[in-house]
Length: 80
Image 1: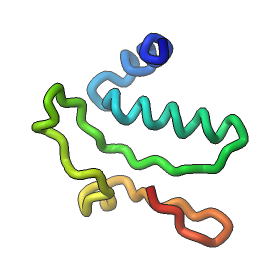
Image 2: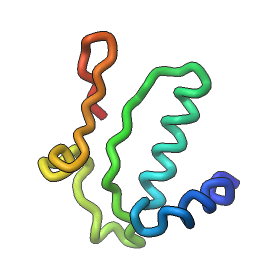
Image 3: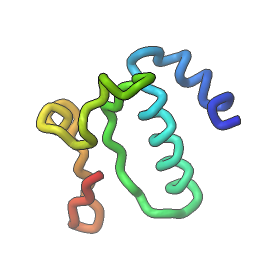
């Protein structure tokens, strides 16, 4: 049912947003909106049926350059 709820968002952003990123972002947002900690989000996952197009979880140098993942909270850097 979660995928059904997220489908309109995926349709809106198409290939610019992977299912992997959307699911992780939804989970992070859910935790934060429920009063939990800000976890931080690093995008850049690639949807791949068998994982051959996947890159190591990062942030990689390219990810860090394009979309820095560090979040500062209470003076401390929080990295994904």
